[in-house]
Length: 117
Length: 120
Image (cartoon, rainbow over all chains, first blue to last red):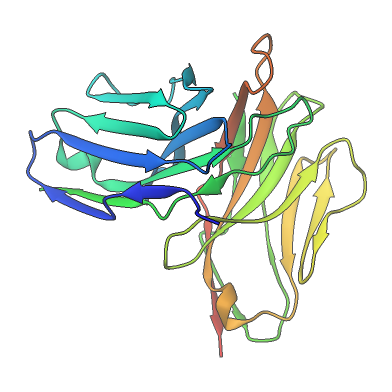
């Protein structure tokens, strides 16, 4: 089975440049999540979607960050302009839409390691 | 807001021994779920075990088990017969629904992780 697919695996760019991270969730999964992992702050939920609709974006650090999910099989996380403090590993995860029993695990992609110089 | 605390940034254990990773959380909710995720050096996040708060019985998955103390808001992970492949970061996570959000609306909070090294 194909898991969650993220691209690129590594991204190195200069500050001020636009960065776009991509994610393809597992087919049939209705919920998609973007996370950022740093040594200082651990794993943080940035935003998540249900049925392509953003539900909670309170974790998005600032206006430079934006996320879209134009269809059920694709999502992007964009940073414009990028700054050195954005350097982190960004994970995408998907899960079947939650029932009230809250027992659906999330399946994570391999992550994108982003370095802003 | 919910908080999840993993008080052990790093731990080590001898191969074949048992190790326990601690996790405490703070919430006023009565219905929620708790998870342990493993992140090996490859960075892939792997679900290790999950626990429903309404269940008193501790969850078990092969060599992994939890000690869930609801009153104390504690959710520790025990790894028995540690193997070299268990070397990884381990994240504790708390999940609850968002009121009025409908199906699929929930909040997920992670701890900062514990780096576990299994020594040959």
